[in-house]
Image 1: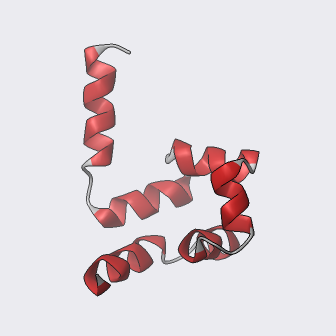
Image 2: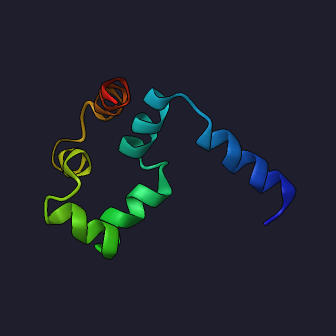
Length: 75
């Protein structure tokens, strides 16, 4: 990984919470997309209902950023 690539990744990570949810819906959130596509460990937990927010995201594809934001406020 080049330095520029690392900097791009850091920018993605530090985006506002609402943008993160939006990217997942738009398919730019590669980790989430891969989890849904592969159904490996994390995806398996999600399908089994352990990750409720993630499960809702897969089912509805809406209000992802909103749910994440509410979760942070709730803690």
